[in-house]
Length: 204
Image 1 (cartoon, rainbow, N blue to C red):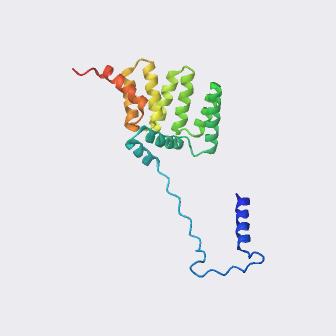
Image 2 (spheres, rainbow, N blue to C red):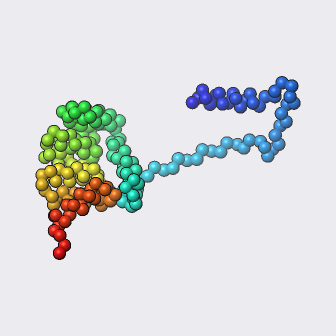
Image 3 (cartoon, rainbow, N blue to C red):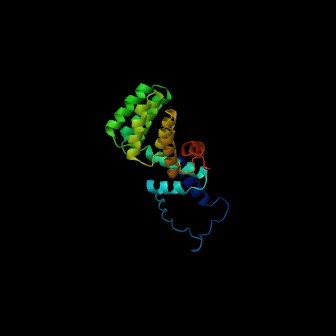
């Protein structure tokens, strides 16, 4: 970028020079003089997490909600510690390679550094579930939700585990909690619409 900026400056300088055999360019009058550079505009303030959740609850379409939820997930993925963030990224790589024991080991180190990071508890719950340890997964999901009650992914995961254990009433409760946070999650709405009548009973 610096090279191109210099090249542009040189181009402008050459274009201002008189061409051989032509009259020198007349100076511009005061109205034609270049205006002084304007100060750069301040960058817009980033929305707070509370503001993002407020927008998520008011989203009118699933596409709009997906964009906002992605921003929220990015905030969830930052702990404030570069070391913890790096370790969680390495755990994600291990998870992708199905090296679940290594993923657990790395997340354990993350939680030793950042015990109040909801996303780390949620990620470890995901690994526990892959290791066929629903009890450990549920315990970690509850920890994540206790730290961040609006963690819609943790509520969704909890609903899935409860459904797998045939605890439909508590699963429905978890799924409904998801929709109070993110009303546009169509897959969860579908589950609630199917499960609700079964748990609550059909209206006569």
